[in-house]
Length: 212
Image (cartoon, rainbow, N blue to C red; front, side, top):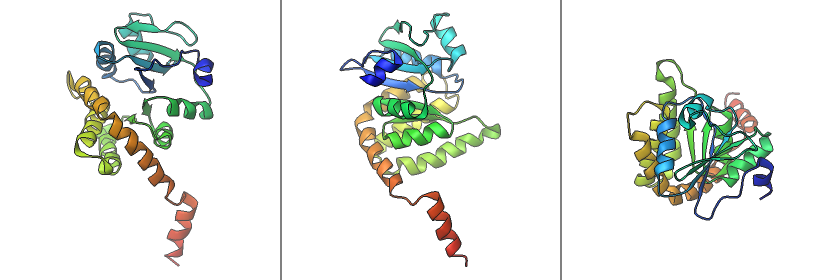
């Protein structure tokens, strides 16, 4: 409750899916916003002010909400702008949301420690190098999931990171939502698995010790 108050947003409704959205410019975003607005479940989307500004400006017809201001409501979607926060409060935001859309290298690490379902957007690289990087990550992350949940994660992240064609991300989102109970359990196991690994310094000492 203190976190929501500090961000200037109401607490989520009992049946609401609360999302954090931190992304690079993404051609799939308007279609995903449409899917949220037209969906069966209320969606509360929290986006830092200035993120995806061009797409949001076009989608809202120039009515992009501002931090501390009134949310924009369209169909089942309520879009809240929030201020950028420090690292500790960003961690709290990730913990408090049902699903986190994150980008780049730092926020994906925090999303994994938050142990919540997440969708990762990689920084686009020449020759689609980032696509191979995503596939390598998903091969590890999805290894402990059942086939349906693993497929849902792959389809949504693939659609979020590449131009998969009309309708792809909307369909992938529905599969992802259906897999949420499994993904929530998996997130806890995955974070525990990461915590069980040695840290970088200890790993380097061990690696050097085998060479001398």
